[in-house]
Length: 598
View: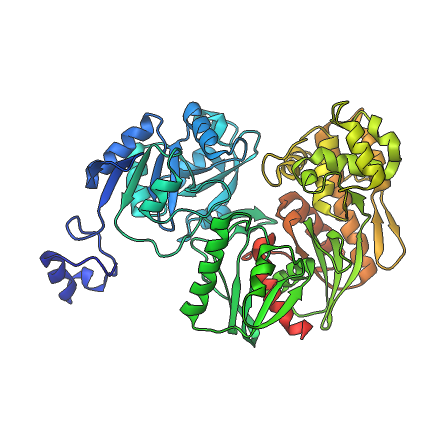
């Protein structure tokens, strides 16, 4: 606000001790405060001040896409009840399937769309104003178009979070889609010239103002899991609130992972995590990573002596860490996940860390992802893991759950798998896949629980291609959620070191059920089976403290079943709340690891 010089009238108010504005920190004067402008797609000025607001509202009613300058960057808004307008936004943003978030003017409007309990209401109406994933009402189609969140049981909803949003939504009168103002895999735009360049061809109009944004901040995302609000994306409203440790640590820096990247610094007893930066695939995000790195160190005036990074040298974050000054410490991916949850709760070893995600490089140079780690004061021991299977096509198997399903069946049936009716491939595709699997060409083996979810979702016909991250796993959870059953499948524990959880009999029973059971019934039995596996390993490990971490534990149904099963058996269970269970929490775990790896 430094560049806004107060007018004579405001100056008198601020200098008069008996005026309430004497104690105010911001300027909202129509003369000397920030000024609104509405620009067209080419940057031509159309209207100013209140007229800009009213015209933007009219364009929303007409189905136009408006880029609005929010608190932490630009957002793209469109009428949430206009099917064609939303489809146009999807086409322009290259986002064909992933659900959009909604913004509504107040809690009453949110309650028309979703079922909201007291805990969710508290988060939704808090000063942080995050996007909350909420259960949608049966009549939601009266208020919003199907294109907002096709095939989803949950809606991402946030309340108007700035005065500008309040004014615009009050003028417009209906819910709007509100999504990050960026191109795919790029950071959110924060200044006018950047927005007009990067969002050209996406936004029809730009509702902007002359107050600069210093740092990009995406909207935070939360979800109710096991009765508590759990952070899925930590950004606006929650950053830079620190995590306070019991003991001081040296000045250190952690660079996180490749996906959902955040970085973190430690100073004394405090760990400060950056805002969500995103996936480090694009050059623009890598530049934002570097800028945030510099910003954090300068703002908190620290020079890190130790640099913590993921064990995977192929991660951009690990490669960028090589160029930094300080002693480098690689931290195994799943160990970092477990420690992030322990740091959040101030928990010291020993503990059993149950870490399930898509994948991370293991100490044996293979892809881990379904791990049970004994956390000790000296580090960790891999106590148990899922039986590995091949992923034909490697990265393609992440995008196509049907490939994970094929890898799973190939592990059981060998070449007979290719004729199994549960698979979803053309006759032309199968010979190439058979050759690849037989020769193990580009078919890495993995213990990933995330790929196991994908495989089951594919076999049940719920999702063959992931159009966005986690789509298959979410489809499996959504299918299971309405079903009430305690039935589960069998599984086998192979007594070796580490213990191998053999899912073969589980998959065989799933295949038998497909002929005469609904996908939802099979899905709930599968979730129940995973909870039973967790209990069985926990009882073997004989550790009282259990830590759940990794992207799979964004699944509310899985967490609730696992926690209830473990607590009934007398275990103390720790789940993420303030720090994401996904890779957004890795940097915290990497810093916490310094205590134990020397």
